[in-house]
Amino acid sequence: MKNNIIKCLSLVLAMFCISFIFTGCEVIKDHKITVTSWDISTGTVSGYGTYKTNYEVTITATPKSEQNRFLAWIKDGYIVSQENPYTFTARDDTQGKYIAIFNSEYLDLLQLTSASVTIPGMPIDDGTSETTVTNITNLSFEIGTSSDTLVSLATKGATVPTPPLTFTNEFTIQPYVINKETEYYITFSMTIEYTDRLSGEITTRRYPTQIRINFSNLGTTQNGNLTTEQDSTTGNYIITRKNLTADTSWTVTEDASPTFVLTFSSLSFEQPEVDDSENV
Image 1: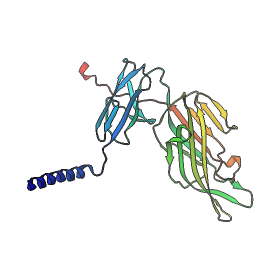
Image 2: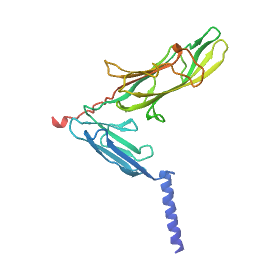
Image 3: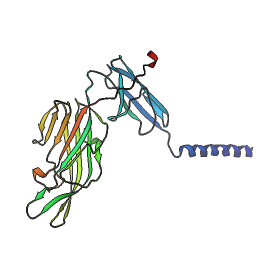
Image 4: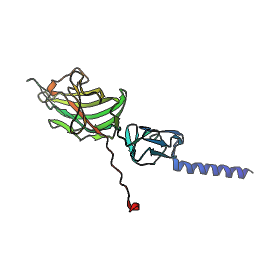
């Protein structure tokens, strides 16, 4: 009897060890997957539910008509897949809300296509000092529907400047999708190192700037420093924020203050190739 108990315990221990080797310390828990349609008049979805860790999840989008072709799945504002059905593994980073986008004449979404910043190289030159930009770090653009919940749009690491300092399409731009009819908060920030060539003194200033933007309201706001325009040729929305202010009382002249520009274009999806061989 005693030997049987020992054998059973040994078997349980062996199974535990094997399980630990393959799964490590991963905790099995529930992950909620929500699935919805951007416009329920264009298509329906299925696959929502609660799934255990590492369980295979499949979500499906069903168009209402041939004109309402499925386009993509969006999660947390990002395009995650154009596959339909879409299969993934339930984990902490995959749980959440998936939105199916179907083709429609009323579909009017935008995405960031260009981010740029211009930094004059000589912000101060009053005869007693000759200050120039010597380093720029932590450039980033973020967006969100509330001022404290923002996600990254574009980032860039440190760069050694060569005036005039303009960066266009040199940022790592994320495929974030926005609704033109929704109001958003956009935050731009960067750190600039200024060096006085006469004294050798180095001054570092951070430029954190947050704006509130509604793409439906074109024009100029914030004392003329923020402009939202729509290009008549391309249809792109261009946001320009001039005269950025540093996080201290240290200031530069208007002509020497940094400016950032974001360009949003209409969201366009690559058409999947259709195999017509069976119809030949």
